[in-house]
Amino acid sequence: MSKGNMNQMLKQASQMQNKLMTLQKELEARELDISAGGGMVKIKINGKQEILNFELNPECVDPSDVEMLQELVKTAVNQAIKESQDMVSTAMSKISGGINIPGLF
Image 1 (spheres, rainbow, N blue to C red):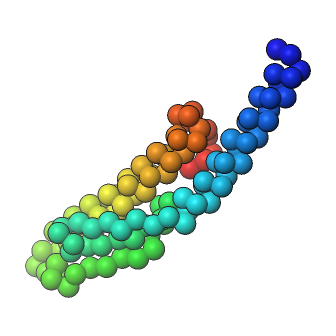
Image 2 (spheres, one colour):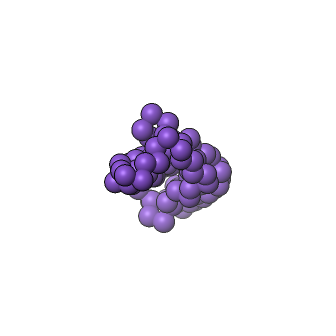
């Protein structure tokens, strides 16, 4: 490999790293609104998989059926995390060309 080709590869790698870092910051700020149980449980989550807001419709709080409420909350949280991870993965693969880069989420 010639020195010119090596310099070009290093320049491209640096550009890709800059794009990935910019995208990572943008994704951290993106928010998703997720609901479960027909809107009984609502969660707002960001691209860092941090829950920003959590709402329970009082109608789903039945002291005689705590298990149903637990299942609704678990479903909503798992769905929110998955959708946030999918959003990040899709956006990152567009920049990296599908290459998995450890440490970037």
